[in-house]
Length: 297
Image 1 (cartoon, rainbow, N blue to C red):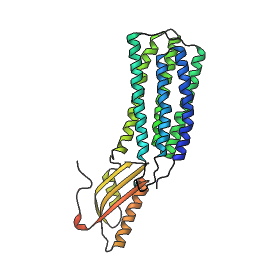
Image 2 (spheres, rainbow, N blue to C red; image 1 turned 135 degrees about the vertical axis):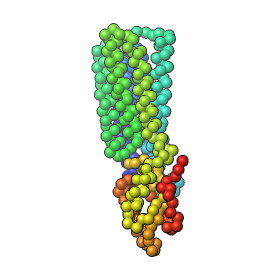
Image 3 (cartoon, rainbow, N blue to C red; image 1 turned 90 degrees about the horizontal axis):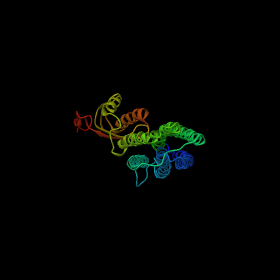
Image 4 (cartoon, one colour; image 1 turned 30 degrees about the vertical axis):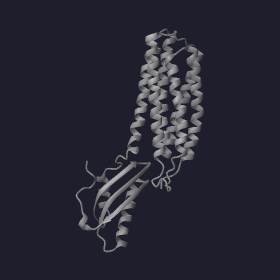
């Protein structure tokens, strides 16, 4: 049975929410003082960090891995839905950044001004972002939480965005005003790439894409003494989070008790390889043998 680590996930999300609000406020204040478009865009990016934490807390509240009457397969897809929400927020942030940059190109704007104290404040922001990203990623991998891992990737993109913005503002400080506007576009691309990565990693869970190659399951099953053949193999879920396996199994057994013992050995070997996993085996007589290991397109 997969462990319920939602309490740990919620604790991490609460800590990072407080830190992200601090980062967002600091970027917004410095962005308004300097008139930097790239920094204000970065502050907008940080708004999505805080929104993602709130979304993650909501998703974690409803994402119990334990089955119940209404959800016999558990509730883990709520976390994947939460991760997709993060992807949507990133898409919105990307659009806002590009829109602001294009408007400044067309309409112009006030010159950007920056001072050393303001640059030091941005270095503090960068340090907080680095801590949040590695903290979330470490805990996310340990408890196998997709919402924490997805949010850590978002924050990691925020680190590169902040580094780019700081570099641009240093250039502005040295007299290169155009750097602030130019850097707004790669910021948008980084935001878009982060959202696409989160989307790509969570869609397979939601659309029930194959989790394990049927040939691998077939080989493990046939390695159990007494198994004659297996076919119509299907799997879904995500390895390391929760996998569901179904198959039709033919065994060489004179009675139900022996057949049951063989199927339990098949389940044991699959669990050792792919845990956490739930397995459904349909026993068939030898005459039902099939050459189709899995379903064909």
